[in-house]
Amino acid sequence: MKAVLVDDEKLGLDYLELLCKNITMLNEIHCFTKSREALQWCKDNQVDIAMLDINMPDINGITLVNKLRETNPDIRIIFVTAYEQYAVDAFGVHADGFLLKPVNQEMLRKEVERVLSHH
Image (cartoon, rainbow, N blue to C red; front, side, top):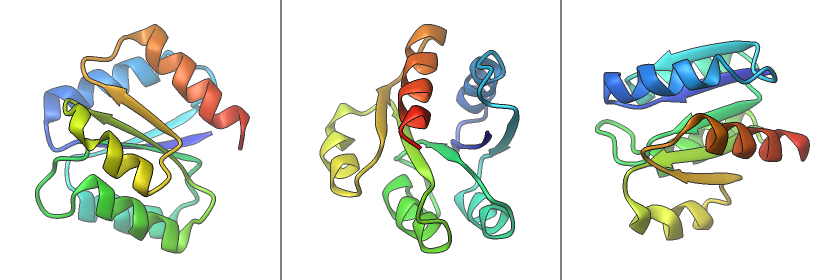
């Protein structure tokens, strides 16, 4: 499965990538600190799952979901954010998963497996 990770905080993105590399279902992982770059890449590549921060400059995670689904209606979305108040917004765009930072390996693995098993 091909995954895209988007977080404007490089350290958080690097940590999430490290955790994702330990999830056997994810055999291709692409990371972006800029929403626009991720969106452009996803237009040219078929992606199974996107893990997005919500509070980002440029294009926030909620808007990004809608744009990603325009070109790929089947993409699975997991929000990974430090702000629980965004859960309502995530529900509003029908996110497949929602994790609060800091995430750990087990919590991320379970969420990814749950989301992708319904793919």
